[in-house]
Image (cartoon, rainbow, N blue to C red):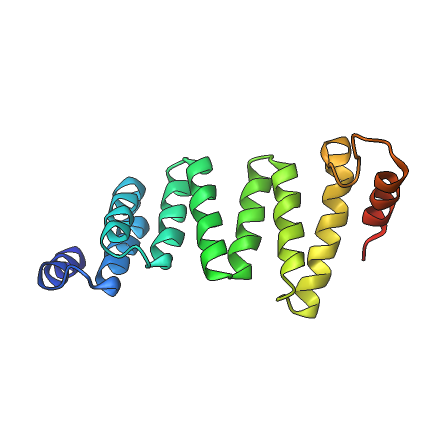
Length: 162
């Protein structure tokens, strides 16, 4: 019934963002992740500035098991919207996929935005410190390849960052 109503709304106004997002969300909630992805993609083709469709398509792709594409969509949404929750979710996705260096880079980027509340900023600092320990030698900030004194000093400072 709801699907039919959304389809009717789209036949009347094919540029209705609410109808596109509603139909795609309905598809996702009913377990049709591939169909939801198709609807989000169609919405983006007609409404390229509908950033919420990027976020939705990221969730649909994640549900369908297409994690790399989902992460790319969520990254694009986060950069476009500036939503710190999207960056946090992206970091969680990188962690779930075992991509710790990417998770560290995302937390660092989130911390660098300066838009976090005090508790969220403290959490971001803790996550950066913990992930630096896990990443160790793969982190170019914490373990520079060039052992020149300036780089080593910067690495020591980075390890002690608040």
